[in-house]
Image 1 (cartoon, helix red, strand yellow):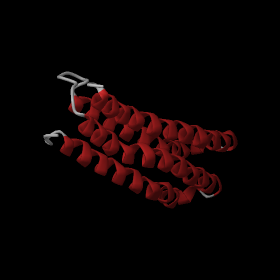
Image 2 (image 1 turned 180 degrees about the vertical axis):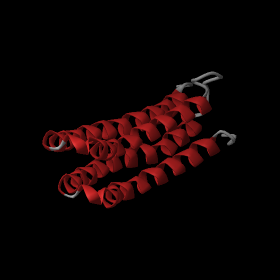
Image 3 (image 1 turned 90 degrees about the horizontal axis):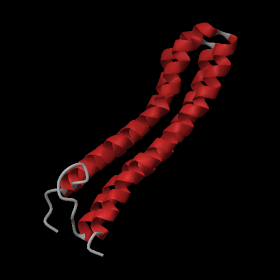
Image 4 (image 1 turned 90 degrees about the vertical axis):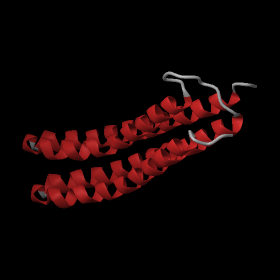
Length: 160
């Protein structure tokens, strides 16, 4: 029971990397399938569809960043990994925005990217506009990243 705080904190870090990473893996795979179809028909569009394929992968990077910050804060990556249950639960909750929003935004961004890949396949001159659609979804992943960074960073100074 003495280590329950660190267990919850570690669970939050793992959830952040796991869920955001899983969403990104599915999203990049989904968009890769659409991109491969376009490149089969016109190999000159490879560069444009590759950019659209990569967009859903950013959430996995954000989740990994939150996991690293959390692991550093809680002492797993050097230090003394002991804390109260209350503090461990706070770390867990601080990681949830990136975990949940990272997962869902990667999947939704993939759908927008697939549609944009379809647009580029028919109208390659509209690539700039096609990028805007999935980029709008990215906004919410960035907001989740920011709130998780602020929350995780703020917990370290609490005396609970």
